[in-house]
Length: 140
Image 1 (tube, rainbow, N blue to C red):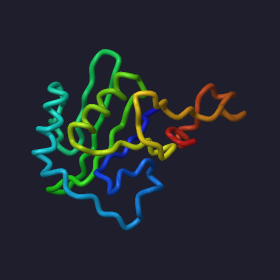
Image 2 (image 1 turned 90 degrees about the vertical axis):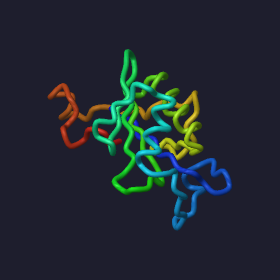
Image 3 (image 1 turned 180 degrees about the vertical axis):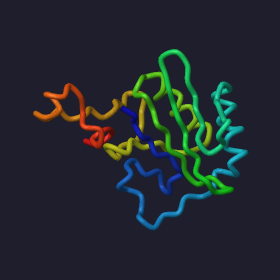
Image 4 (image 1 turned 180 degrees about the horizontal axis):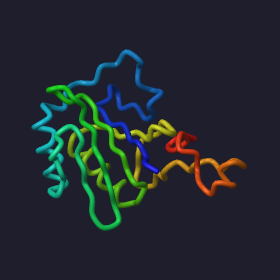
């Protein structure tokens, strides 16, 4: 199960996603090329073969980073495998970029102590099949 983390420069140091005004427009973090180079400074093994969807993987971690399709990057989304190492990588990148990372499930700031969301128990039909219904993947 992938864990989504949303990161942007916030006004006034918002501690939760709910603290950010709906009409807030985050400033640019730079061009896509500049942001990729900044990420590479923290994670030299980043796979940027698709410059809009970056991959950082190694033993015990998998991080995917979406930087959007525009020329300028205003926010990024991390997709973590939930391991402690993937959290550490996301936090290092966020700090290097000067952005605040938020757990999209809880709305809280991401910290080294954050834990991925726990999927709900399987329903009766899923128990019989021995797996989650395909349209339920990633949903709570």
